[in-house]
Length: 169
Image (cartoon, rainbow, N blue to C red; front, top):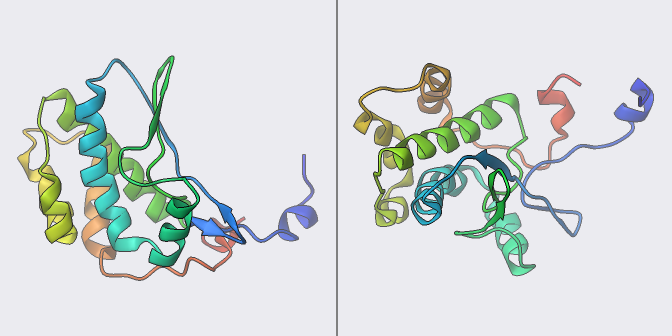
C-alpha cells in the first residue's frame, strides 16, 4: 500500500492528452448488444458531454496520436470497452455525469432507439438537457446525474488541476 506521502507526491491529472501521453476514459459495458446501435448512441450522448467539457487541444492531440474519436471500442468477452472519451475523472461530479450518460445510452439501445448524431453537432447542450425525457422510465440510479447535469453544464473544467483535490485524496 502506498503511504500518504507517496500519494501526495504525485500530481494526478485527467483529460485527453497530458505531458505528451494519451489518457483514456474507457467505459466497460457488459451484455449482449446490438454493437452498432450502442456505439452510435454512446457517441451521440457521451461524446456530447465531451463536446461541452473537453479541453479541445488535448482532445485533438489524443486523436492525432491514434486514440479516442467517435466509434472507438474493443469487443470483449463480457461486452465492450468503449474508448472514445478521454479521462473523465477530473471530479466525482464529472464522473457521475459520464457514467449516467453511458447508462442512459444503454437504456435507449435496449429499447431499440437511435439518436440522430446531427443533433450532437448542432446543439449538444440542448440534446443532453432533453434526450432522457424520451424514456418512459428513468433508472433510479441515473436521477442524481440528470439533476446534476443542468447545474454544471455551463461550468468550465480546469483540466490542469490535480484531481486529488476534487476527490479529497
